[in-house]
Amino acid sequence: MNYFNYYTEIEERFQQARGSGIFLLSPLDWALIESWKESGVPLEAALKGIDRAFEKWHERKRKFRQVNSLAYCAQEVLSAAKELAEGGATREAVPADETFSASRLAEFFASNADSLDRCSSVASAPLAEFAKSAADSLRKLSAAAEGGVLGDLETVEQRLGVMEERLLAAATQALDEDQLVESRMRLQRQLAPYRGKMTADQLALLEKQYLQRESFEQAGIPRLSLFYLR
Image (cartoon, rainbow, N blue to C red; front, side, top):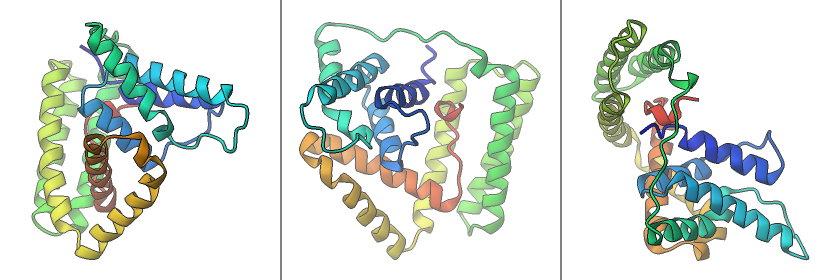
């Protein structure tokens, strides 16, 4: 099942519904998408929830402000996911396209390997060691893609997930206490308007995804998953 354009389709649908193709999603928005993916929210439910949220916004007689965060759609997305689950609906496979051509994959792996090399040159151990090891593995994947022997993308994605988990653990460990506190305070400020729209479990998952993304960004580590191939 090719489900790797989950992020891109949600981003594009939100931009279309908002009426602004140049609007950039925030780190909180990306973390929210990641939390939906991790909790198994189908793409169909995410798109339907975004549409419903904006339909209700347009129906309001008084619109005090523009919708500037995907979190505005969270309740409708989760409601749509619940409806699909109760109806026994299943995810539909997204057909493969040029996004996953051999050349695009090879370029994606090689570019991330270069970024990890830069990270390893300035990071302290053990992050530097994990970054160098991951860079070597990515170059092998790049060569395999160019040679047409990469194999099944789901297996590749699992390998990339293992690399990310090791890098995340090392990157988080490398952050000092002040950096971690600052990240949490930034998160709390952004979450404040939306706490009443999410359950405790949803908020916990969103916080986890946001802080993980912060750790990667502060360490200069690229996201390796094929979900980030755009």
